[in-house]
Length: 143
Image: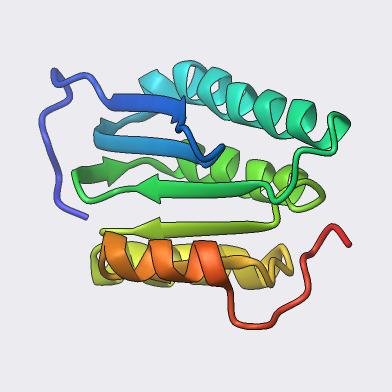
């Protein structure tokens, strides 16, 4: 991940589209000084997942765009790891796209360490959406 300017605020966007897919974008530079903002954002996503679960609003699908992510500190990685563990019990499938090779390795490692079988990293949004909507026959982690 390239080092960006600490003066540039990170990009954090989240919405639920008309099909009920949780759409997440994060980009820019996530230095440790943004850890609490990032933690709040992660908790907001968890709250949406819990609410969908409570309403039996399945599948719970999440699309994460990191194509503009330039840098994240170790503390941000810790928060991401914790969120992946928590979200495992709610998510049907989570697809991340736009990661550089280093981030792909980190995210695949986190998925393995949290035993997330329903989390995949893709090079393009199109490939991510195809898997998100159709899967590949895997069983959801929360089943």
